[in-house]
Image (cartoon, rainbow, N blue to C red; front, side):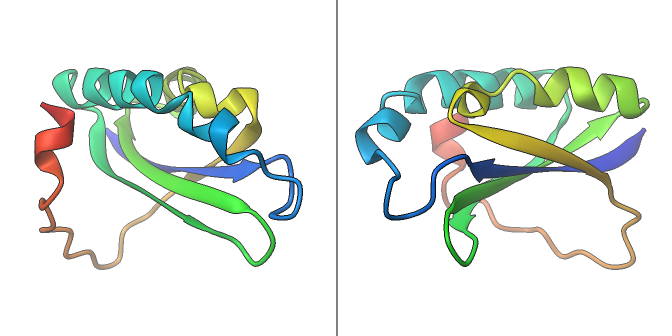
Length: 105
């Protein structure tokens, strides 16, 4: 299994971004993340932003690029943005952060 970074960017810049449109997708986003976690594909997830638009990062395990693409296509955020995949050859990671784990259970 390889690690892939699913890098999501909103289609609209911060000035045009519709927060309600984003918030309406949160229940489906968490269902997608829960599915990834239960199937052993989810490594990490979180949101933030780029210099001019909202964004997020989901790290997943996948057998190959095709499976990574299939998994990343499941996010409802692709309806209001795009997800780019990057195969992540990990040099170092210390991802022991689980304060919001309860949201994925």
